[in-house]
Length: 98
Image 1 (cartoon, rainbow, N blue to C red):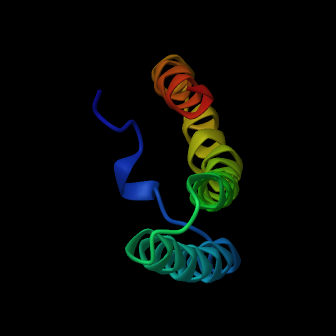
Image 2: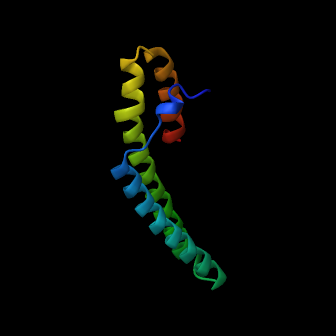
């Protein structure tokens, strides 16, 4: 689906900074998982760390989702593009809920 308000999809500075901070921590966690696998660490310990990364990524997704709802989606609705944005929003929610 084509983005309804593609030119308007800008992440607010504070959200961008928080998302980037979290992603840097996640990168460190992923490097740690790679090290654990190289060192033949116990599978349950590796899986625990993978689960932590998954949850951390969900946290980043929440930041971006909130930014989308507060900015992009709200502007589109106010601009009279409610029908299109609702379709886009349903797709985003479906992907996010998987």
